[in-house]
Length: 382
Image: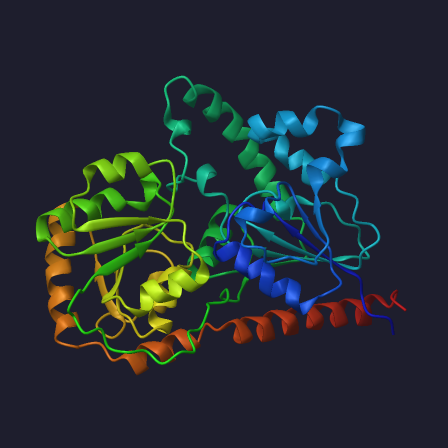
C-alpha cells in the first residue's frame, strides 16, 4: 500500500510561538507534506522550515483573484475565502492547525481531514485579543456586523473536519460550547531543557516574563507591581504596547526585545522564576518551558495553566487581575522562591509530561489510526 499524501494547513506563519512550534512538530512527522498558509514571513518564524515547501495561499490564488489577496489583508472577513478556494484534491490526509480560518478548507469524502484546534477564534467569542483596534469607536460598528457573519461561517467551518483535536481541556470545552462537537485532547509540544540547571546565586536575582507586548497580556499590571516591590524583572518580547510599557517601568525593569531560543534558555536558566499574568490562556506553553528549566511560575488561575501547573509544587496562582492581589501573591511567591520551596526535579518531571516526543507519538498514532479506520471501512484506497 502506498503512503498517503499529506498536506498541512496553518492560519498564518508570522511569529515563532506555540502554534508554530506545533506545526513544526507535525511537519517533522510528515517530511514530504507541503505547508499551506495565508501569510508566510520566514524571518519571523525563526527559520524553522528551511527546506520545506511552504505555499502562501494568497500568492497561489493571485492569478484568478486579482486584488483579492491585497484586500484580504485589510478585510478579515475575506480570509475564509482564501482557504475555501484552496485546491487540495491531490492529497489523502489534510491536517489543519487552526485558531481562526485554516479549519475551513474544503475536502471530499475520500479525504481524511483532522483539525488541530488551538482555540476557536478568540476575537469572535469574547476572549481578550492582541489588537485593540476592534474596540475603537470608528471600527466597532463594522466589527459587530462582520463578526455576526464570521461566527456563522466559523460554526459551519468547524463541522467540516472529520475529527477535531484540542490542545487542552479548556479548548475542548470551548469547542463543545461554540461548535457543539467533541474533540480529542492532545497537548502541544513543550521544549525540554537538557542542560543541568544551576541554582541562582541570588547575587543579581531577577524574575522574567516572555510575551508579546499587547494589552491583553496584562504586562502593565506586573510592571506596576514590580515598580512598587522593587524586585528586578526582565521582559522579553515586542509588540504594540512596547512604548507605553517602557515609559511606565522603573529602572529595576529591563526590556530585552525579541530574543533567540538560545537567549530565551539563558534568560530562564538564570532567573528566579517566571511571571505570567494573562487570563484564559488556551494552553500555556511558556509557563511549562520555565518548569523544564526547574523554575517556578506565578500565573493567573484560569485557562490551560490550571491543567498543567500544580499549585504549591510548580509555582503559585493569583486569582484577580488587579494590583493588590498580584502584589500579595508576588510577595508570598518571592519568599517561597528564596527559601527554595519549589523542587527543580519535580518541576522538570512535570514539564516532561508535555514533551515534543510525547506530542508527536500521540498525534501520529491518532492520525494513522483514523486513516486506517477510514480505508478499512470504505475500502477505496489502494
